[in-house]
Length: 145
Image 1 (cartoon, rainbow, N blue to C red):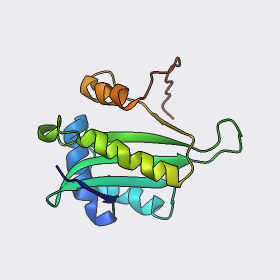
Image 2: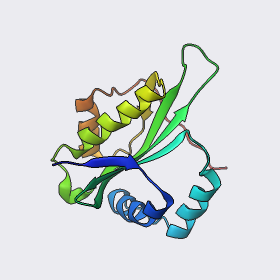
Image 3: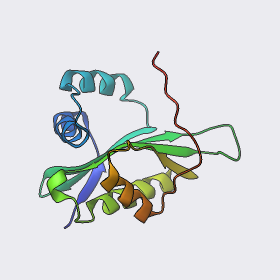
Image 4: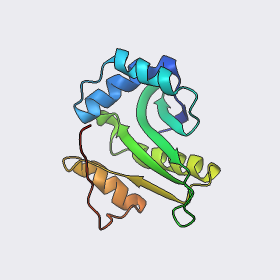
């Protein structure tokens, strides 16, 4: 399957939200996505990456590039909402998506790529392990503001 990847544009938001709501059982509204997109449109360190098969959005993720002043940590990236359209899984589209993510990260001189994944996404965990991600000895902490 030949997937074409490109950075998302504002015009892609409805398709992105439809796909991510499906993959993650979320209820993000298009209005919310448009508001956040507009607020961050000029931030070159936030990259929404889309994969298309025959003109249809079938894969998506967000890459956040984080440069730091810390030499050992250097510049790193966090991925979120890594997803492939459910009926197209098992066709290596996730691997192709990650290949493109790592190509972009190399362009930005990223030293390390991190992601977190909810426990119920066991198929995604298989992809991450296969791709070479390792579970680190850490806890993910969260607190509402």
